[in-house]
Amino acid sequence: MRTHELHGAVERGTAVVLASSELPEILSLADRVGVLCEGACVGILDNSARDVTQEAVLELAAGKADR
Image (cartoon, rainbow, N blue to C red; front, side, top):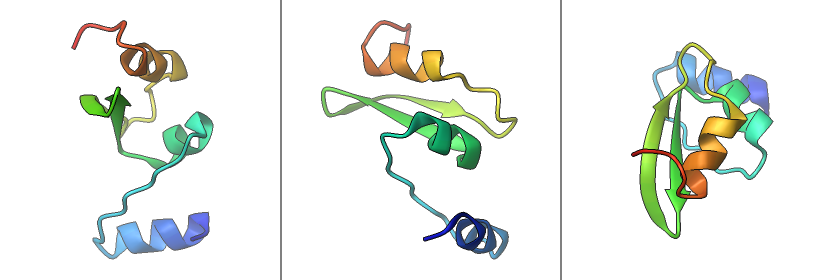
């Protein structure tokens, strides 16, 4: 699905789940970022203001950030 198709789906009220290892892509598109560590969800970050950093995601993913 292309970026404009994702935005169109969101505008229609459709929930979109995006799985990617490309953090810049995720952070530019996602309102919320779920982070996994060893197969478990360790956090969900609010990115509606597009202010979540790659460092914050990586700290959670590595198990180094406070949950």
